[in-house]
Image 1 (cartoon, one colour):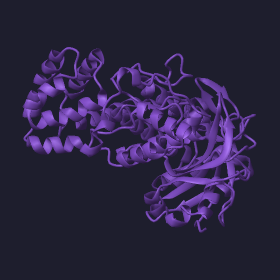
Image 2 (image 1 turned 180 degrees about the vertical axis):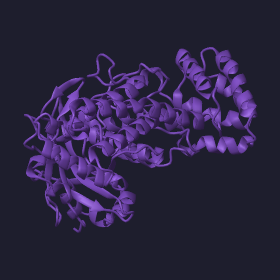
Image 3 (image 1 turned 120 degrees about the vertical axis):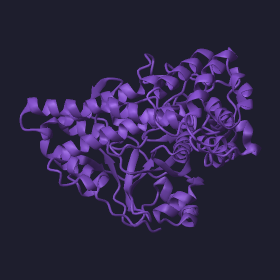
Image 4 (image 1 turned 180 degrees about the horizontal axis):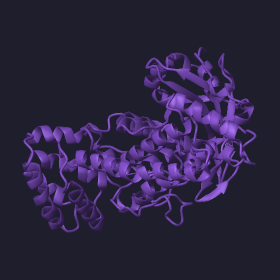
Length: 490
C-alpha cells in the first residue's frame, strides 16, 4: 500500500521522539474509511477499505516509507505542570503532502504502548474512537480548524477500563502534532538548542511566509497567539466545549486537537462544563478564551530564552505579544457573532446587542443552536418571530431584544431573503448533539450496531443544510436524554 511519506519530524534529533512500532492486534476489522479525506491526501480509498488496508490502519502492517515514532512533550494539566507526558497511545506513521499541497501527519491512536505510556496499555476503546471520528469530522464541516479522522478499525481485542470494552484504533490526520507542551518539554530541560530547532521547524512548517524575520521564536509566538484567538472564537460560535484545554492539548497549528470529554452546548450557559474530571469548571464554555491566553503565556515562557538575550527584555516582549490575545479574540468573536446575527457591517453598538442577547438566552435556558437557526427565518420574515419567542421561558425577553435588532438591521440595505441565506451559512442546523453521540456509542458497543454512527457522520457532513428527512437529529434532548458528564475514555 503506497503512502508518499516525507517524514521531516523524524529527521529532527532523537530526543524529540521515541522510535516505536505499533503493537499487533488480533483481528482488525474496518469500521469506516473517510474516502473524501483519503482523496485529498492522495491515498487509494479502495485499498484502505480492503483487508490489507485494515491491517495497515490497525498497525499490523507498516506501509513502505513509514517511520513510526511517538512524540515527546510535557504539559500543564489543570494548571499543574507535568514534565514528561508524550504520546502514550499514539504513534505517528509519517507525513504526506496532499493534492492540495498541504503537509499532514498520519497517526494511529490506540496503537499500543510507547516509552511515554506511564503504565497505560496504549490502547483505545471503540466508544472514544467513534466520538473523535464523529466530532472531528463535524468540526471540519462546520468550518472550524481541526484534526481529521481518516479511518477507524476495531481490533478484535478487549480493553480494560471500568468495564471490558471492544478495542479500536483511530487514524488521525493533523497539520502537525506539535503542541505548546512540546516546547515546554525542552524548556523544562533547559535545552535551548532543541527549543531553537523546534521553533524554526514549526515556523517553516506552519508559517513559511514568516521565515527570515530575524527571530523565528517571536514570529512563531505571534502567529500561534493569532491562531488560538481565532480558533476559540470559532468554538464559541458553534457552542463547543473542549473540556480539557491542557497545554499538551493545545496545537501550535491552531487546530482543535484531542477530543476527549468534549461536548456541545444545548441550552446556552457560559458556566457549562461537561468533563467529569473538571470539577472546578476551569475549562467551562465561557472560560475557554481566558484559558487559551493562559496557555499562550506558558508557550511564551518556554520560548523566553529565544526571544531576547536579556531576560527582562524577553519577558517584556513575551508579555506584549501574549497581551495581544485579548484584542484578537474580541475582534474575532465579534465577527462571529455579527455573522450569526446577520449584520453585514460593523457598528459600535453591535457588541452590546450581542451581549444582551446572550444574557437573555442564558436566563431563559434557550437552546443555542436552535435559537440561531430559527433566527435566520426571522431575518427574512418578522412573522417567524413567534416561533423564536416560543423558545424562551419568558417570550417577551426575545421580543424586547428583537426590537433593537430590527432597528439595527434596518440601517443596512440588505434584502431579508439574502440576509437569511447568509445567516444559514454560519448558523448550523445540525451539531453533534451529546445525547446522539452517547446513543451511537451504546449502539456500537452493546449491540454491534454501527448504523447510528453512519447516519450521524452522513448528516453532520452537511451541517448548514436543513435535511428535513433527518430533522429529528437537530432536536435538543429531552430532560431524560441530557448528557451532564463526559469522559476522556483513555
